[in-house]
Image (cartoon, rainbow, N blue to C red; front, side):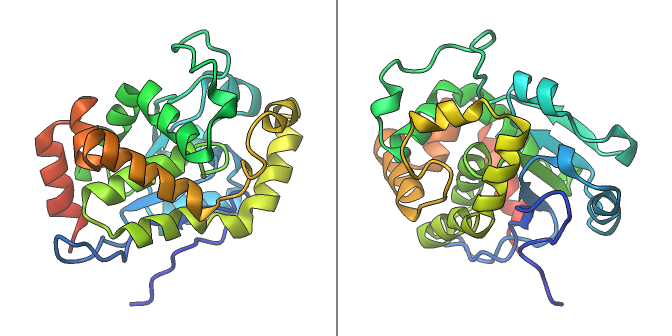
Length: 248
């Protein structure tokens, strides 16, 4: 069977299947059960037929902030996909703890470290949802499908023993879509231009060094993705079940 990594859609430009990656634990990740994406509020009617129909997506995990959902919209409920909102960050700072005040001076990898540490319990909750085979096929997403989604994808792939090079490559695969993602993002949230100006120059791209640095940090600080997941509350049985069901 011919499998497709990037799913061509009209509204979403970064919708990808996480199947087909070899694991050091043996086997490969299963095709057609876990997908990563940019925001599903952009799905056109034709896209909906692909996502809910051909792909059979049953569950969606929205990692966006509360204000993003309020300002640009949510997944069309008529598609019949069960949506779970787990906002991993919130720019308004009304709901979650404030980030490190020195954040703007950090490297890209350190920005990701802050994201998954300050939002650790919420990333853990997302892992629990995404790892539940009873809810598959599942798609998880943020606005661009790169930062929050990229970190969660890296953790999921790391938990099942996918090689570091493939995890970095999966993250970097956003790059071709990055210009269009940036254009659409600024059209929907023009005030983000001022935020991006204060962050590293490559914040809207997907440089391999960013994910490579994050993986180094996860190894050094938590002993790897499993140590990270356990520290923030993921059940060890969840990890074993993910390995048993996502690897074939």
